[in-house]
Length: 106
Image 1 (cartoon, one colour):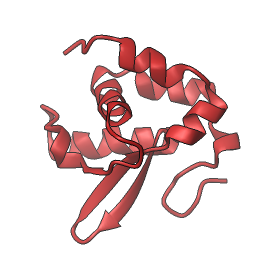
Image 2 (cartoon, one colour; image 1 turned 180 degrees about the vertical axis):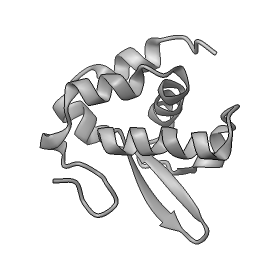
Image 3 (cartoon, one colour; image 1 turned 45 degrees about the vertical axis):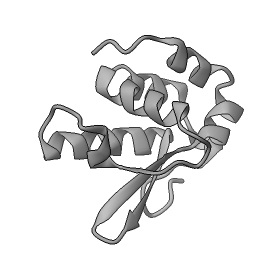
């Protein structure tokens, strides 16, 4: 069962939900940028400069969070996103390597 913020446990991460979240090129870009950053790096949603409205950014990050790809934590008046690297690697070995090898489609 997901926690109170909607983060599923590693064993609850479903391949279909992860692939659906990664089907969108903007969400893949977010995951790719987090995967290329040092372990534990946290970024605000705005730091990705996605070319969409604030409501759409919120939707994209909720989709990534509910799929189990990122963890979001409130820090003051913003939310920080970190990649759930160890959980992803444990559940779907090699997925992050595939994503980081893909050229940015945007």
